[in-house]
Image (cartoon, rainbow, N blue to C red; front, side):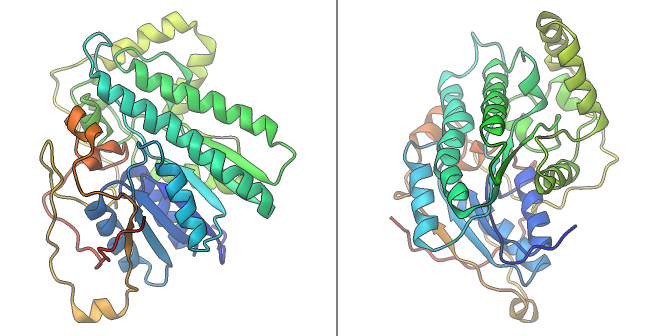
Length: 355
């Protein structure tokens, strides 16, 4: 891959899963990273692991709940105040909800619409003119193979991803003669914590052959750098997209319904490479926990730059959306990997909040 000097990428939902793997790829190519996520502890862990792997990377982390109305504006203003010249925007944050629409959680679905759609549009609205004014830039919008077909049992989630596809394709036409490119990532079912957050861990699709966050991120990065309009990882995903274009929507909906039904079969073991996303300890159903890292060796510390997390949320109280949905703050990101038992050491961060 081509090495890029003095370029900056801002990634939302960057603490784990696809977002984290994208951050690794950008770090490998000497980008300045601005990693954005809701949960401070997981964000710190991710930053520590990246700087352990790439000791020379310039990295900043921002903790903020992007499901709040003013969050994108506060994030954009903070970036400008710091004087960071963003070259690439990755709109990755999002989550899902599983079940019959008549029985699913309304508050969770409204929060999903806010994060998956409103926040993505708001950030694009703020950063696109900025990229155009500086004369170059790239935007990666994270959709899904669900963008192309009705998705029974995930009806609202599928609709949010269909919105991202339509919105981004319209932007591609508007920007075709500009120096800014928009790439749409449409990953298949991927081995992240998405299904646990959505409540779909027992569905047939979650029990099937899942893509890895690494292969999804690699396809996305390569397409983004090439200025491609779409990034569709894996041959299976390409077949799904082709099928959705050929078959009637009613038949696609029926097929998707069958794939999304629950099953009692045990989950297949994955033969693919284990993800390099930092592992995190389990959290309670209502409140985030503060994880205590193991102390790093003195020799290791000398080779790693210190990072400071800026917390742009003005209160430490439990967010109303989190309380209403029963999710933890970290669960409002679709790209968190399944929890493991041992937390990765994290960098020391500042407790000072930025208004």
